[in-house]
Image: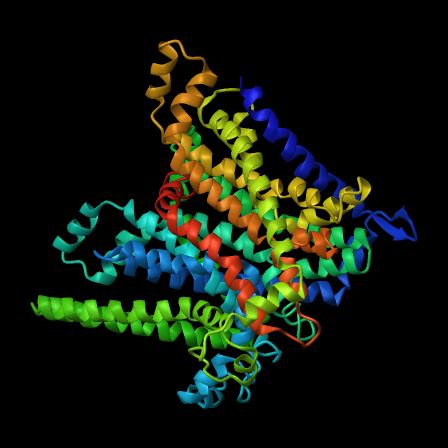
Length: 638
């Protein structure tokens, strides 16, 4: 029975992930000479020792990931705490904060590229009008004004990090909200009775209660951020020079642009131990928190290692801080200033509220707390929704308004000129249809295979179940950067490049493992007694699965459908590498091809961004309740 349920997924994962990884290892030991590949052993790896481009890419990836994760945790936790304590409008605010994570990456990149333009961008105009721009020069946070956010070597990396934070904070917020709901209110009441201040309750109740969620979320996000390609490519293409080029872009340059598959494969495989270490840590964490009974010797070792585990976060913090100061002293200074301002403001508000409460001014403290939370939420919403508002208004401006920067905040008059030009100047309708077909097909495959495999791993007891579960987790976090080179070679071999089938075949590599992992947690939350009653009544295992489990798992299935559809809708790397003909391009790659050199059709890109984002935003708005439930039962609790 387990074999019946697991075979579809095993075939896809084996053929699309494990075989390509093995092929990549073989490819990394070869070098291309004309049409032939010659075995060179470890030469490709040895050449990386003196490769300055590779060294820069590794440092950039580390710096990009470290700073982005720090800000995501701080802002995501702050947003979650603000929303968790709200009695009214929490669902609406959470939905609004989720929008940046929902919109496609190509929309994020193009909107921020326009906003950060040194001459015509609204960011520079706003900072100049408020007098903040010259102040940034005085504080040595920028070298000159107006600032070239994406063209200045000293500002390009901080700007890319900021955009990644803008897109990633909603994911952290949703996960932290789910974790906060699981913390018993009795703990807070007991701490308050004992005289604990707001900071003491946060440090001794909230943070320990969120330990598991924070660790899992940061680990997963770190893996995704470390292997990010599309956002960096769409914002800067690794420039100016190579100051923002991550190691993935180095691999792409060697394998696809220079056709040196062996050198490109070696770049990705050298980074595999880093990713493997993160995955190993994540697997160990999930197994420790799964509630499984440990051997006595293991329990004794865990007790003896309590002090070491408590000290480990401080050791990691010290090591990471030292590496960041060494790798990017300029970025460290700027990040420290921004984080310091955020923490000082939060500490000041908390101190005022705590002082008022100690003096018995409950009404005053409530008023100050409410006012402070509203101000913080307003600032957060402005940061989150500002770029999206810009997309909306720019899409309805005339070309003259876009070029001359007139009526920047409100089109006068409103016009559909950009939408007309969008469909007239490129096959945008064809790109839309291609994306819809590929996304629907990959979502259907993920739902069917993940439901079967997730049920087997959650309910059936068979030899090798734990190993299969670990394999699913490994393939879930396996970066596309490791797979796109061998998959590209395989597709060339079977002549599937430049076709929609190349995307339908390869998209399960990142949609199927995630869907399975989420559904394993969700199926485990369904009471097993319901199935046992159905089996006693004469149902077979398949009938119990179809008539009892699947109807109860609708929230989890809808959450999986939303995630897989969004991932397929937004995917850029595979579509960018595998598709070159306009007639087969998907929306992210098609929109990127609308830029010709320095000519950026901002109005048409804004119109395209609006049309690309609306369907996904509507789906998430309608399925937000199922998304939160699916996260809580599956991905967060694991």
